[in-house]
Image (tube, rainbow, N blue to C red):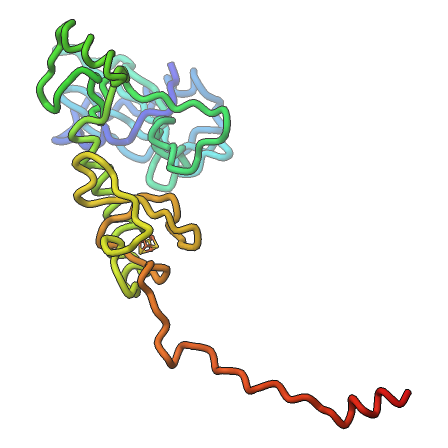
Length: 264
Ligand code: SF4
């Protein structure tokens, strides 16, 4: 039976001297292959590889159009004390030059920030480590009706909240991003967000490192910025004298021309 494709990684298990009877069974292997595929798609015998004790795989060139670099592989087996072989497997294997599909990447791993369009759904895994049940206190799960009741009354009854791991991941991502201290904008800034009047403070542990920029003229308006981020729209920025515009001269009234106009 022909099955495709099977990876060529199987060659790593091939070792040792092939069984003499199985290695000589080239015609048997070719006959088995020709029962499965047209003769014009089978080329020369390329090799006989030992797969294990009395197990040999015969490789034949594949001449099928569009299958450059692929190889027919027919595995034969000789049972102990037997003088003939039986066919174990017939497959088409990709070689190094074969065109094969790229490795499969799960859909959820292909989504990048900014890919979501209106109406798209991106559910998180039930055991996503970035989230913990809303009635936990950090690492310790406090799973009792009394705690749930208090949480509900306080309006903190979200089913899940950010875990410590989720919080740390977010903090690292923000700090390393364009709103962190290493962005070109921050490197050239005259002052840091921590001293800017447009910084809105956060609550909770993240407030020690981050705030929100509320300067409508700044690039980062509405974004979380690290306290050591900064930009040229800092509230205390003042232009030095050399950056200020040249003062304009006093206006001059051309009285001669004005008198001439009145004669018309
Ligand atoms: S205006 Fe600039 S310095 Fe001020 S908070 Fe926003 S990003 Fe930070």
